[in-house]
Image (cartoon, rainbow, N blue to C red; front, side, top):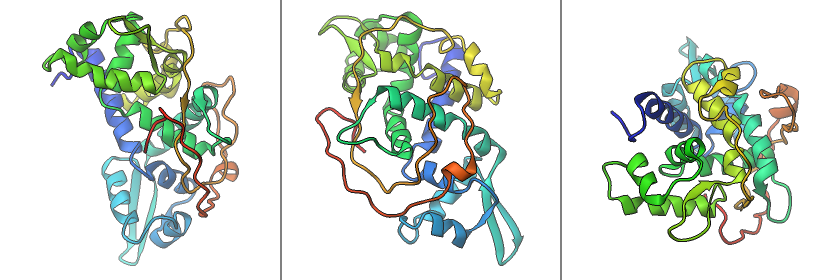
Length: 280
């Protein structure tokens, strides 16, 4: 069933990416995926790596990740069950350092640099705003669009004024710009910079090699850079070990287990929240 008035292949592309984001954005999902990198783990071994989760929280999270095809449960005997990445889950991991690269360039931190895992989580929060993917797709392909025209494309069966709450949120998040009430909307530098991330998520969700992102019909095309409007991260969460630098020319930066997957479970002090930043 179509969710926009865009051509069927574009509509399906947006729907797949929206579904992929919905799989990984819920709280702790990315951290569980990172904790599972390497050999399969017993439940108790995994629980020790994500010890900040309260009793009873891990099992339903694992069940959801297994149902999504990202995690694989292997029952060796009735007393020996392990969890590890499914093939689709392992294929998704290279998207995460691309998100770090984007966040390092476009995310405005409060008082101190955030751990990479928190940059990933904050960035995913922005991308899963309601109608965000469809609006970003339209603005990337058409450059400048009025609010009324966006509404006809993005939510054709809804009252056209309903497009303004998500648009205002995307402007507040720094992904979309406008010159004022009644003026057209366009991608900001940060919004346009999401091209490699969204293109790669599109390739992954369609079952294609991630390097196909460079050939995406929308996000594979560069655009002139409009004025930048950075956004502010919200407060800290329990921190994992720092991820390696992701700012590289390689479109699919390599991660190494020795760099990523040791886990600190202490709670960090909360960072100050500046007005207008995304909220968890």
